[in-house]
Amino acid sequence: MSEVTRESVQQRNGQGDGRPETSHHPETDPERKDKNYYGIPPIKHAHWTWQIPIYFWIGGLGAGAHMFSTVAQLLGHEDEALQRASRYTVLVTMILSPVLLIWDLGRPERFLNMMRVFKLRSPMSVQSWSLLVFGNLAGLVATRQAAEDGLLGNNVLSRLLIRTVPDRLLSVLALPVGLNVGSNTGNLLSATSVPIWARNWLFMGPVFLASGLSTALSWLSLVLRLTRSGEEKTLRVLHRAEKATILIEAALVAASLARMGRWSKPLFSKEVAPLFVGGTLICGILAPFMLLSGRESRPKSLLASLLALSGGLMFRFAMIRGGRISADDPEAYFTFTKGENAPQPEDKV
Amino acid sequence: MATGFLTDTTVCIGCKACEVACKQWNQLPADGYEFTGDSYDNTKQLSGSTWRHVAFIENPKKRRLTGDVDLVALAEDVKDQLPGGAELDGLGRWTFMSDVCKHCVEAPCQQACPTGAIIRNEFDNVYIQPDVCNGCGYCVPACPYGVITQVPEDGRAFKCTLCYDRQKDGLEPACAKACPTNSIMFGDVEDLKVMAEQRVATLHNKGYTQAFVYGTPEVGGTGGIGGNHSKFILMDEPETYNLPRHPFLPQEKFKGGVIASAVAATVLGAVVAWAFRD
Image 1 (cartoon, rainbow over the protein chains, first blue to last red):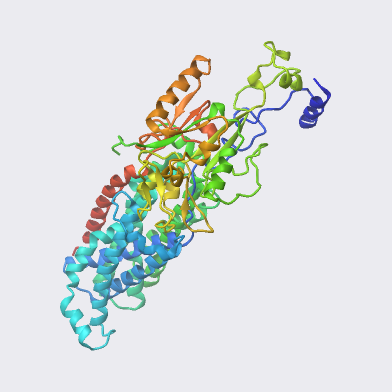
Image 2: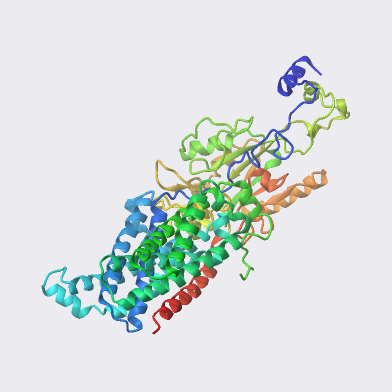
């Protein structure tokens, strides 16, 4: 061995046993800590920051509130306080949702390009159009409600609104679109290459919808109790529905975890575990269920509502953050795309 | 006619002329001076500002030198019988791979795009119309190869255009033009497919039985993507090149998800209706 080589080899090894260390292949070099191509993620994570999880939260809340009040109407349960609370809630969420979404765009001034095409294959396009239709229908219903409540003054326009807007028909028409706004937030995530989301394509929509309904019921119950309005029966129904929805949500979260399998790891990482285990499972599901299952009382119900609402928000943050960690992990993506784990066209379920 | 690339990594010398040519022609900014490993790879990955990326994979051979080997003599004078009984491939050498947008036949980014900004142009290339893109960023996690990113300073998403402007004037893309070893070949995808098969057959005859084409419906263009118009001849596992073995079309299961959600919505509706009993 030449002198130059020997020196460099000895410097590198420290002991100078004459074994040149020339390999930097991830599988043969014991000094390499990063796997694959220097640990650089093979896919890119979404840039979404706080606007998107908050939109997912209020979008689900609006969809759930609309569903509850429409079902109440269809079953002939007339409670004006409930309708009022629900319609204004939907109006506010449907005004805030596009604001958050446009805020998140790289070129916000081009938001109208979302309306250029209608693509059933693009979950984002479906979401944009659903928001447009649901927002406008629900907005019309809420405007009529405002006219009824005298918020628009006693003038020709108000009377015209009350006379011409068929609120029941519009609410029913808006129902499937609104439900799609709620569930599509989950389907939108699963239609990506990110393992933790893509793996769970079956339960992603349902779990977001159930969680959205649970936050909506909690919100309505919170508002009706705080304003001390709403019939006794409405509160009783809300209480019962909240409990059942939380159970369904818990089952769907469990099914999601089972389906995600090893790729659910990011949800239990140091960064996301407080949001997922603490926020979603304990604060959003377990605690409200315990509070609701005992004897009913006003403070307990209020606390349960608050916990379920914040649990729903933390669930959405956990899913988005978990997706980022999953996308940044080369091992997760490569194990996912190695064999039969990734969704394939011929798969039925 | 569909055009595409065939990147033969066996003759790539890692000169990065393609990267430079691409950046110059398309006026893309630099990515800073951070390097991976011990190599001069300072772009690290494909992104909205790097449309060609030469990966420097250090010593892809799963063998290590043993014994007292004179590396200098080994490098200067390669004889049949190497000193120390070493094999030439045992040297710490590089594998290079010039990565680029795969221009999928069924492109996940195109399907994800809600504005219709991502289209297939007349050359059957996947092309982002910069005057339409509003920077929603949904194509970024949809891409199974991590090709597209949003450029923060600009807001929009960018990726390889397969030099749409040059093709319209009858020129080959800048990277293929600049490649000194013809590692990057440009042409009709049908021709390139035949060329790829011939090249792999030649390599197999020479004893390099590990050579294969990446980007076919069997490897690299799988899961509903239907193959890639940018194919690669690889000599190692796809993962070594930071490529997925069996990528998939993420939108394939969107319909199933919507059906599952409709079922869930019905169940939840029934539960709410049940709560109204008495």
